[in-house]
Image (tube, rainbow, N blue to C red):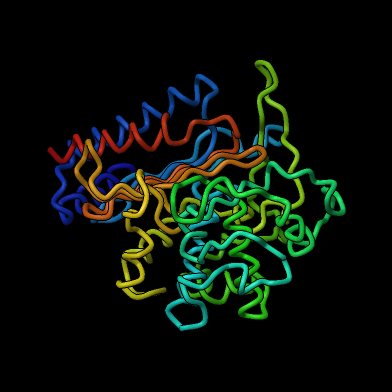
Length: 357
């Protein structure tokens, strides 16, 4: 059976014009790098690597649940934290494309019930140049508390957040921006964020293992934090506190479907996709697009890079996309302390690009 498996692997590699020995070296190099991190208790999770020819590496590492000794696989579900923002921005841009929202409209005009004083436009909220402070600095007592809070009720506190600078003059990453965008989506469509997500992104892309609220815990990883040198199960706060800034979950397999869709017209036109991944020329540095950190000419690989990290109780994540070469690295971890970008996506990128030279 092993001989038959290797035969078909060789056929596949030849069809992709990848020398068998070279592909095996890439596979082994990536695996050895990740395995070292696993041995050092720096990583537990799933990794998928792809280029223009398709998936070239995918594997699960460590345990999704230590108590039951369940291993992580490539279809294990993880919370993805701020990777949620790229889905929120896509829903907004679909509404822009349909003429239901204007990028130059002021966010406070679309939601007067929040009594916001900030004059930021929808575009400035998308690219974090609104100046609105991060709601994680809020005193939660201004609402009904941390338990089962409703997003709109919680957002009533946002008018207490001071502006750091006049809108459009600087960049400051703030979860408040994407919380507001979620409320805007729900108001314009008269549907919940979850309903919009399923109807306009997840169902069309058949992302069946991705979602917002967790109704089915099947294949869902337990998140862990580190206390001293020991691992402890991390508690998950009310999902509505993360909301549309960080409340989603997914798998590496599903995020690969997402990656492919972002290079096609399946969800949105090329014109509006280019807006999502465009550097902001109005501020310096303008390295945030709409839901993505962007670098149109990456200093090392000379490629148009788009990436984002995600961190939430018990979990960390990162997706790196190189738009010209179609290289994509996806890392999901059930260790909240994993350095997904520094220890994983960036070193793996170097392995891939070195192999192309």
